Amino acid sequence: MTGSELIFKAMADSTRQRILRVLSAEELGVTELVEVLDQPQSTISRHLKVLRDAGLVVERRNGPLVLHSACPVSPEPVDSVNAPGAGHDDNSHGIPAIRDRLLHWVAQQPLGDELRGRLERVIRSRRAGEADFFDRIGTRWDQLRVEAFGDAFELEALTWLLPSDWTVADVGTGTGHLLGALSARFAQVIAVDPAEAMLDAARNRPDLQQARNISFRAGSLERLPIETGTLDLAIASLVMHHVADPPAALRELRRCIRSAGYLLLIEQETHHLAEFHQRMSDRWWGFEPAALAEWTRQAGFATARTHPLATARPTARRGIESPKLFALVAS
Image (cartoon, rainbow, N blue to C red; front, side):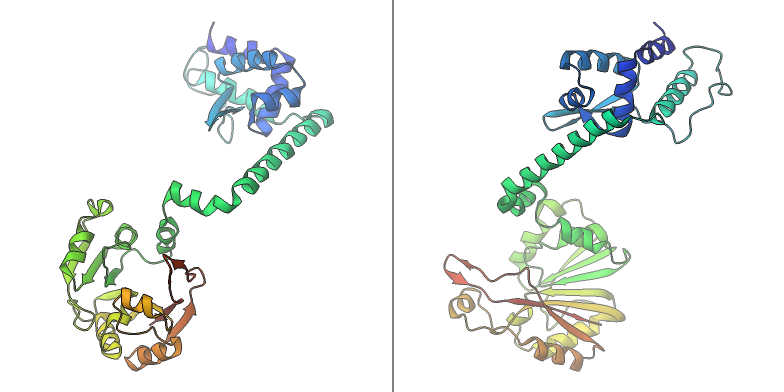
């Protein structure tokens, strides 16, 4: 049987026409089609096979479900009369033209009140089931997202708000947990840390093995191994409280950042958590945001704004309480 004969055979049945009208409006599973069409499942499955064989219906797996929809067509149907080779029944232009014309026609036919009413009930039921799913797993949603996608995809997405031709430094990079997101977005990334062991760990991260735009440099915040005025953005995350002279470190950062560049600091708020302070070998017991902002302006930055990081909630892991965090943005 030729392609056009399969199409005309499929369209000759009124039930198959109704299935196509419904699937032109909504992607549905077999059990949902059974409810909408009010037909036995065996009947729906038989008609779906005829429609699939004719290229009028496609299916997609969504977990354990198989969803069916009308075959997608071009925005405007191909003119089967004027198409090249239109006179040949199974020409590669002629069959798609016939199919697209019929599917456009089907999609424009009204569903009717009864059919539309049953379809709307099925969709409402599906949405209620989706809501039940989120109700069931709501308390574990954050954990499931991290297990599925990791914990840095939102940071990676946010970097796309910034120009891709920037040169960015991660000062005090440690083991380089920010470097994957930074190297994927920016032209050049400079990773600085005073500890060679930390730099080696960063170099050997599996997610950085293909990166060719990262420069690893040993150096401290007080004496940065970076040329003057080369950075568009400098990031120092949880580094300043390890520095002996924060005002001098801020002046050094100002030296490395170009006139229109930016500084991002993430720091601990002032605290009195002795066990945390000792375990982290900190020099400073955090900072008052206003005081750190004033030091930043004195270092030569025109503006310095601070914001508490509400998502960095203090926790008591293994009995050690941690301080609150804040961000400082300067330019």
